[in-house]
Image 1 (cartoon, rainbow, N blue to C red):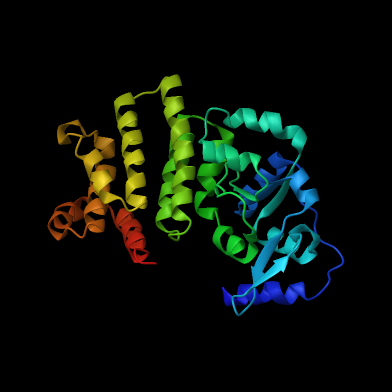
Image 2: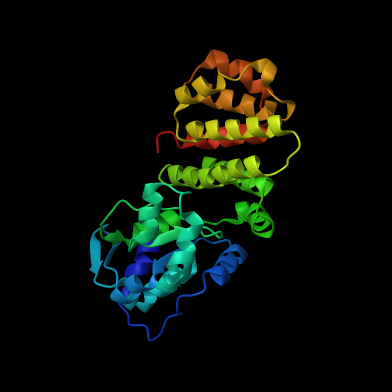
Length: 298
């Protein structure tokens, strides 16, 4: 982190003659983000041309004020290094809004509308829901949201190629897996992003003709319960899990249910019940839980 901050401060002391322009085509930018395993950083064009104030931290962790971050070529270069930067045309507002109308939370809609820098995934869904007016700390922003998305690449590509129940539910599940290995600071936002895809899968479930509907519906239910594990709310998870009778658990969902029980009891440090469920859980799932527990006090 200190090396990263030092780089910003040193670069700001020099005047660079040019910077790479931000992209203006969201669809092309999404494809580039997928190819480069990056997130997008997105801003409305009026905001871009009006300017955005920001701060960066120096090596003493003191904030240095920048009147307009878009006037500093070095900051543009940093954005390109860590994200795919995009300026959204105001002319595209209506078409973009129609895609999320009545499908997102009020906080999501507010973030979509406001002047904040938006972190989007390669499908154009917003990760960082803003908390109102504040001066952006660019050092912390880049450090938090500069994400290598290679872990998600196949599922994102499949979703782009064929947006249906299976591509949505697989991507939701993969985002949740990814969240286990992420920091406490960003995990809740990754969970919210996963739930966007899970909600889409639920909509497709109602519309599509699918085999094994009981199994798939139960899968959706278990994945929704998993959010409580990732948010470290094990008692809520157990209340939901206990409503599913053992005799009603579909064969394809046994492993996920076992993992959720183990995860809940692990968070509660219930050694007796951990011993019951641990032998029933796959090695990969144990690694996810180990990662979550290692960040328990971070």
